[in-house]
Amino acid sequence: MAYWLIKSEPSKGMWAAIEKKGPKGCFWKRVRNFQARNYMKQMKKGDQCFFYHSVDERQIVGVVEVTKEHYPDETDSSGKFVLVDVKTKKKLKKPVTLKEIKSNPSLSNLALVKQSRLSVMPVDQKSWKIISKSGES
Image 1 (spheres, rainbow, N blue to C red):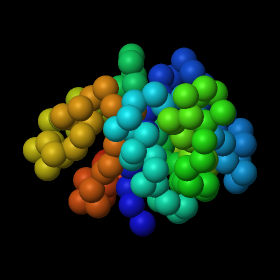
Image 2 (cartoon, one colour):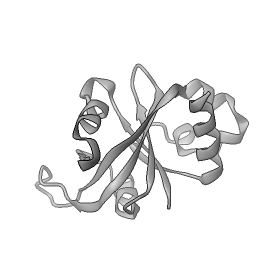
Image 3 (cartoon, helix red, strand yellow):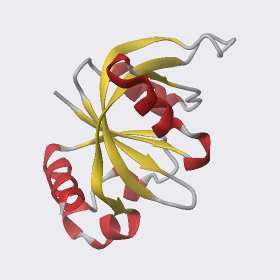
Image 4 (cartoon, rainbow, N blue to C red):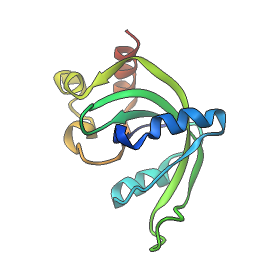
């Protein structure tokens, strides 16, 4: 199993849409960055993803699970981009802010710190454990 972080603006309502779909899950949509697309192509069913609210909030709010591996994004007329389906696993008891992440030297290697504008990025197992523990306290 691999770990990821996916980002969305809170105003887009993706967290609520994914929660509403329940165990069926919902597609992760409209990624238009080639590096993020390549990461999505690496995602496997069962992989875990932190769900990050970007823009004003800048915090991890929950965990979702990949339920369907990449398939063509019908909204992309070029045929270059893909979707994955995810379902809600859990909402964090305490959101983990970008400020907290940046202040922890053990998390300095995260793409979130280095490439903050990327909407899909890998998370190593050590960082996953640190962030998960922080979100449960």
